[in-house]
Structure formats: C-alpha cells, structure tokens
Image (tube, rainbow, N blue to C red; front, side):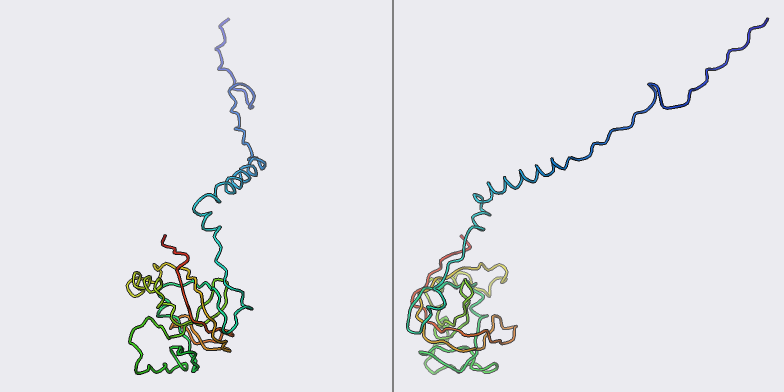
Length: 218
C-alpha cells in the first residue's frame, strides 16, 4: 500500500503555552508615598526658608508708630511712614486751614493755595502739608518731610521724574514729630489722577528729625 502524505501539524488555539504574550503589570501609585513626599517638602521648607533671603524678607515686620490714642496736640512722638520719591509730586490735600505757617497745596478742590510774596520757589515743600499713612495705617498730614536732610538727599539721588515709577524703591522714614492739631475730614488724594476724598480725622504734625530707617535698595 502507498504511504499516506504527511499533513502539516494543526495550530492549537488558546493563550496557554510559552508562546503566549504576558500582559504588563501596571502598578498603581502609592497614596502613602505621595503624602510622604509632601511631608518631606514641608519639613524642608520649614527648615530652609527661615534662613534664606526670602525668609529674612518674610520675617521682617513693619516698625510700629506711637499708638494713635497718644497723638495729642503739643506732644511729640516717633512715627514711621513708607514712601517713594514719586510721592513728592503725588500726595496732596485741599483745605483752607493753616497751622503755624503750613497749609495744603490746595484750599479747595479746584483752587491752589496762593503763594506768599516771600515764599521761595523751591524749598522741598517745607510748608506744604501732604497726607501720609503710617506703617500701621494711621493718617496724618505733615509738611517738610522732603526738606529733612536724609530724605532730601534721597529725593536728589532718585528723582522720580527721571525713571519709571515701577522702578522706584519704597522706603520707610522714621520721624520724631510734634503734633499740632487734629483736622476733621479734610480732603486728600494719593495721586493727581484720583478724585478728592475724605478719609476721616487727620492729625497735623511737623517733623523735628527724620531718618531713612529701612532702605530697600540695600
């Protein structure tokens, strides 16, 4: 008898056997591991931020002025105001009252205070009252801040009209002042572009001695 022709082997179906592909195992992220990473970052921030330059800036506190209830006409005290040299031209008040030769730049919302015959053309606003906020938010009017030697030198070294206002450094001035009297609701504005407003009582003061306490350029 003739031999039967050989048949090709039949392929077996199914995924069993060594030739079957294995699915990759996907490991889910560990929630505990993520929390540990955040905890480590928090600990490192607590350790390194206080000794870094950022930590030194964050840790600085604004100097505190004499308590407002101690502002009494005839008394002296130390106050701290924060300004830029641009404030020389920006800050203004409007009121017809005068005190010891000092007055606002305006006597009403539209009328400037008349210049006296003997008044110099440029004396760093020695007799012109301007509004200021202390570093703890108290309002007062002061004339002659820019005539104080250290502040006048800063104004000379960093004239506001020569550079963009955003590039001017803010600084804190500590002044020993004498309180003269308290005005009820005088008009003021912080920039020439904003309308006049009344922001409550303002103590009128004259600086006796001022110094730049904190210079942000250093």
